[in-house]
Length: 111
Image 1 (cartoon, helix red, strand yellow):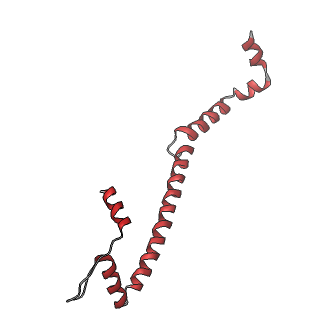
Image 2: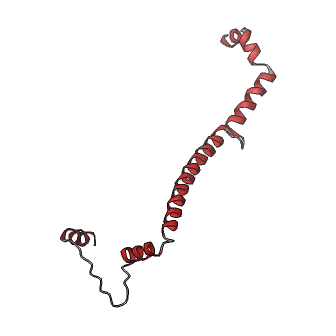
């Protein structure tokens, strides 16, 4: 009895038309199951945003490296960097590395 009342309703007749049902199925298929679905596009957008952030990070790193390379064109800067970073020395020169007590305690804890 209830189905007969619903089937006589004007909206039910409109929505139960063949074209409407096919159109709704088409939209649902495209939204959820198709290769170009909404969820796939959302996932790809998130990946693009992540890659753009990574790109910006590496561009900043490239700028820093270029500035460092430009700085290292001076022979005095290269010598200073080699002495500080790699403890290099000139011939007949002694280098003494002074470590404070605080730094020695931290090293022994980390090891």
